[in-house]
Every structure is written in C-alpha cells, then in structure tokens.
Length: 206
Image (cartoon, rainbow, N blue to C red; front, side):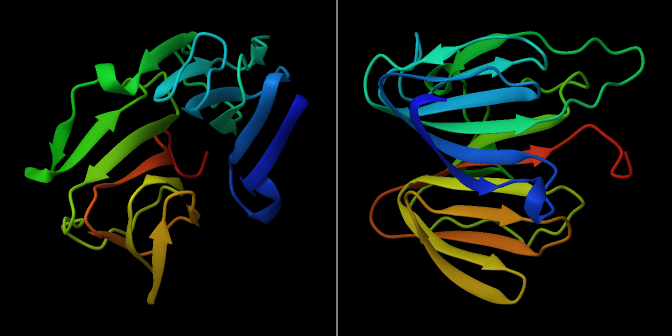
C-alpha cells in the first residue's frame, strides 16, 4: 500500500479463513496487488472509477492497482480461492449497490437484502448488504457452518453473539466464527445497514 493505512479487523492469525480490513487512502494512495482474490467496496471518496456504494471483484493472481482520486475509505476482503472441478473461476467485475434490486429477507419488507456477488458455484464466498428499517429484526437466531465478517455502514442496533448482547453503530466490525448463535435488531430513528461477508458454495471440510 502507498499513502494508505490498513485497519485490519480479522485475519487467519485469529482463526478466520479470510482477511478483512478498512483501507484509508490519501489522495493518490493505492492498494498493491494481492495474490488472493479481493473484493473492494467503497465507503467514501473515489477509488479509480468507483464511488461510494460501488465495488470491484478482483480474481486471484490478477494484478490490478487501485488508486484513490480523493481521500477515501473502502472495505477490503481477501480470501484464497477454492476451485471446484469443472467450474470456471470467476472473472473481474465491477458493480453498484444502487443498481441491484433489493429483496425482502424472509418476506419481511422492512428488511432488504442486496446480493453484491453473483449467486453461482464459481464464487466461494458471498457479500451482501442488509438494510433494516427502525425496529426491524432478523426473524430468528441463526447458527450455521459459515463464518461472517460484518461492518456496520449506517445506523445502529443490538447484536446477539452467543449468549451476549452488544450495542453496535456505524463503523463497528464483528467477526462471527462458525456455529456462533447470532441475531440483530435495528434501533433508533434511521435505518440500520451492514455489509456481510460469508464463505459459501464449498464443503466446510475443504
């Protein structure tokens, strides 16, 4: 990285199978190439052609330097790619969250999900945004084999992790290991929104 700071939230050093950090870039600052696949979601500023709410997926082994035009912040997720026999690896693509049609989660119109990574077996992880109107909650306590990286983008609420409860607000990060019971409820007068990573489409023993 050049003229940039990585605020590392989680990495394999603490048992995760991915790395997630917030990149804070000065104008002209850049991210160097990565050997692992990389997903970058811009929070503020301008990174290359990407503005707030826009993102890029960079395949493993592809050299692509991302340079900030202005002072910027971005979510960066990096993960070694797990190939599947007979399935082509994904290619570089960019997108905009605003261009993706939101879908209600569990038929609740107060809880909207946008899938930022295409749903298909070539991808071994998923990234979604979830937006909760004030008072909206997940309809159940979840517990599953996937691990999560979650960064609050707006608003706030209360998160249950195991048997403990945490107040969360914009800028907070949560790592949820596999089989961690989890639940969220939005509080306040404005919508709560977070970006969620999870490993996906691969056998948990691989």
